[in-house]
Length: 256
Ligand code: DAK
Image 1 (cartoon, rainbow, N blue to C red):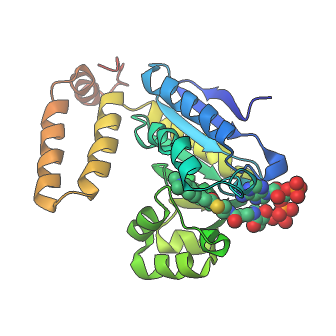
Image 2 (image 1 turned 135 degrees about the vertical axis):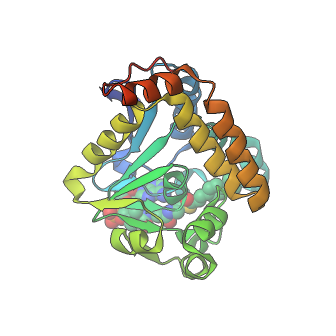
């Protein structure tokens, strides 16, 4: 049985569902391996322009699989080299929309923070409870959370293991929008469909520049932005989209 189910709900849109409901979609090494293979394949697939990542109603993902970690030491953790799995998602050139219902805890919250847009059902819960297990986040939880919601709110969550509701997460800036639980996936697919209809080169440049620029000095980041913006003036889709606007018709995009 596949631990990551793949659907194509709309042209150029892939929907990935984590499929370990009996373990609240805990991220076992096998599940992460499947996820990695999917992301590596989608990176090169021209038929994929936007990715929706979801779990089920109870859990987006309840974190790394505690069962697989309880009796191992640092050497085995290093040999697992889990970063190879995360890096396939981190370096996805295609936009990722997380559709989060239920628990997004530990590695599950970190997985949601690998997305470019987070759509949360109103019953969703976000948290980094690793401290309660005597460990700490290892896939960006300290860094991405602090960048998303600020160091003081992040520190409170990380040190106490407390979680946030979807509304609190929205107000703190951790999620893009909150929907009724039954609408989460549909809303994420609608966003993915909108993005998939945009000129793909522009989408890819915006994603890359936003991420790279956030961690660079502002002047460098602004230069990155300008360079990418100049580059897009060479695309066929730019010529077509601007001409179509002036001719009051829909553009026919080539992706070039
Ligand atoms: N791992 C394994 N099994 C889990 C699990 C998890 N994280 N979360 C839930 N399950 C399993 C439960 O053991 C239970 O299994 P059975 O007893 O039925 O066999 C089943 O899923 C249902 O769970 P509950 O009965 O507890 O269900 P509830 O709805 O009552 O509660 C819950 C749901 C999500 C609130 C609760 O299960 C829970 O608190 N789960 C643990 C959450 C947690 O502590 N997450 C953090 C895990 S540590 C690193 C990279 C990343 C990480 C570390 C290092 N490096 C690169 C170095 C990340 C670490 C983590 O994420």
